[in-house]
Every structure is written in structure tokens, then in C-alpha cells.
Length: 93
Image 1 (tube, rainbow, N blue to C red):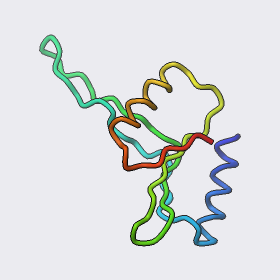
Image 2: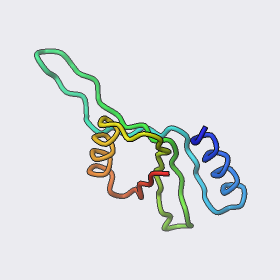
Image 3: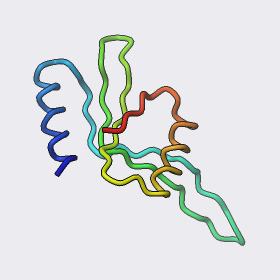
């Protein structure tokens, strides 16, 4: 419910021209695929709730995650995301 409400807020901001390029459920590779014991293991991804831009030519790229409970897996994925994608402004809502 919290994520749905945030989506409605972001859609209003898009219509008002305050943000652009809204993407739902953007996926980011946080660990590439690897070969282990002769088997290829899938790449690991972090899937955020939203991605959007603020500003014109030098726009600020925002990645948002709407959180209820911060699990240990989420905290690990967030850390890996922050390490590999410093060009994004990461926000928890």
C-alpha cells in the first residue's frame, strides 16, 4: 500500500514537470554471473521500487526504495548497490 501511494505521488510530480523518466521496478546487477564447480551461477540483481530524474541537462538520477521492514538481505543488496552505482542518489522512503 505504501509503495502504491508513493507511485501516485510520483505520477503527480511527473505531470507537474518536477521529475522525469519515471521507471518502475528498475533492475541493477550487483554481482555478475560466475562459474563455480563447472556450473554458471546467475547474476544477482537489486530491484528498486522507482527510478527517476530531477533537473534538465545535468539531471540528478534518483533510485527509491519504499521500505516497510529492512531485512538482512535488503541491507546487503543496498550496500552492494551503493558500492557499484555511486552516480545514483539512493533514497529510502
